[in-house]
Length: 412
Image (spheres, rainbow, N blue to C red):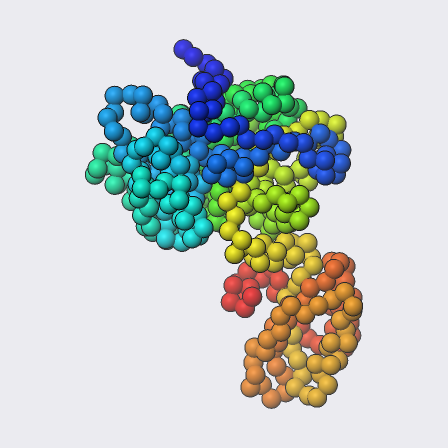
């Protein structure tokens, strides 16, 4: 029986007829910041801007090498897997039907159609991915289509392992540590299957989709009751059974959960400092360096930047979330006296580094007081200590609603 590393090397070799290896580049800024030799495996520079085409290629080539004549491929995906399947349908000249949630960003729908061309039909079904998946699987049963799982498939896992194969070849050896994101587990399972115990892995999940941590705690794949879809490339409700079989012995200490707002600070840092565009899931590995800096000093560390399919219409949201996480922006509901000069009194509290980003009366008909929604940006988080102290001393009643999820949904 062929061992997994050999299968991964064979898959990687076959891929070279379709696309070149993605770059492995040393990042001087991160290396200096963390006192380590930090390299980025740039999966965001693949032909579809994510690693997902690797698993799609490997699974599809194996199906086409079998007895199934003119296979019709079907998948369900909110983005990156769909683009990988579409690209490979066009490459192999086979037909594919791709089901995507109605709520999928237009950028990802457009890219999927572009990569697939005439070979692919995109169907928008369901507000939630579970509905989309159920519809795709029912369609397969009705039509005899071949369903391509985004992660829970042995051939997909084998294909994703080609990332680790390339890292070893490009670096000339295996690194001291690999940091990579976890969604359904295809990439992490493939990397662990290839490296075994030779390389410690740090596996990173978004806090709102920590399905690997839940599975490790339960001893089996466990479905999360709620998933935050912000980091959609890694926001999965339940890790795959096949992928978990590879990962079940990972130490819980090597699995990190990263706050979605904190991911935004890294996305902006990579964009502004390095000119690298990463989607939220693609920034997870780089962001995790903040949590493991004491463990990596002097080591050679590879971070897998897993995807760069970012819709720039989301940039204001990313900036907003990053500022709020860093404490540079806050929202208050302020009880403003309805008298001449009250607004002037409030404005005098603000310093030269403070700026009003939002100002809206919420109760315009009040006689004596009016409630005002006010957003303030500043250049240093400690400035808010002074602002809040001076508002209290001036007799202004206020409520900080920055982290009040329910009020924020309605007002911000």
